[in-house]
Amino acid sequence: MKNDTLTAIDGIRVGHAELDGIPSGCTVVLPGGGAIAGVDVRGGAPGTYGTDAFYPLNLVDQVHGLFFTGGSAFGHNVAGGVRQYLRERNLGFDTGHGLVPIVAGAVIFDLSINRSAVYPDAALGYAACVSASTDPVAEGNTGAGRGATVGKLYGIEQAMAGGVGSACVFAARGVRVGALFVVNAFGDVVDPHNRKILAGTRKDRTRLELVDSDSELMRIEQFQGFPNGQATVVGVVATNVKCNKTQLTKVAQMAHDGMARTVYPAHTMHDGDAIFALSAGEIKGVEVSIVGALAARATAEAIIRAVRNARALDAIPCHSDL
Image 1 (tube, rainbow, N blue to C red):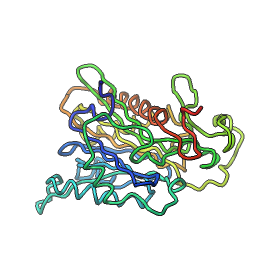
Image 2 (cartoon, rainbow, N blue to C red; image 1 turned 180 degrees about the horizontal axis):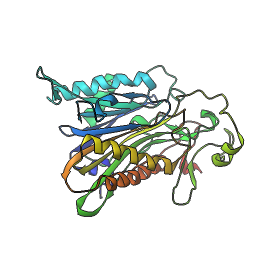
Image 3 (tube, rainbow, N blue to C red; image 1 turned 60 degrees about the horizontal axis):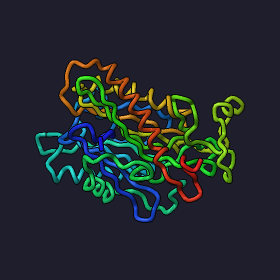
């Protein structure tokens, strides 16, 4: 079977780990010995880690490990496990006084699903690294997407299941652009080809009939009883085209177009939307705008696949239930 997920990019491994019996987990992306990276954050309530390093004016230009995790801000503890794993394998930025692994990531808010007060931690991050492989990425309610939901216009009670999705676009001359996204959106996920809602806000907690969020937003003035920062879509796009940090920042920006095509509304004050971009190859001479356009396409496909592969979360239905 052809691998059409992020790990179709040579050198990239992906691993998932989940808390035992608890609806939360983490996902790691390990780009071989490191990869040039950029990032673009657009949500109004970001929960990112280590992103400043990748702004074009700053010194560090490589990342050795990316993580995405549940647990909201508590999930940042995953970084310690990823860093430990990389350090044991002598991977990192040469400071002149030893190698320091560069780790970055982002969290989703799944505390409305996980009420256990147990969150992803360093041990779980390490376990995800140990499980990382070049196999096709497992999708749906796994890893960081274990407790992900979408369609929260009227709160978690009327939401549907989200998850992890991954895709890869294959273009001319061997060019590849892959994506992996954790879809925990405030908005609905729609098919950009026909604008059909794939998973979104239900009219009430007992029915599968969906709200037309487009129409709802035309008639309301405030989101009712829903605090900021409880949703997000976070992920990474990667290519085998050789890019520098400035170019990858542009690729990450353009990848957000794929999010805007598939999530409605996107980039709200309730979301922490963030996209990393990696260069893990040596193909030269490809216009960065082409890479960015392909990244947007891969992003859209990954987001769609996240909800198509999701399973029901207790009383919260999934796409296949519709």
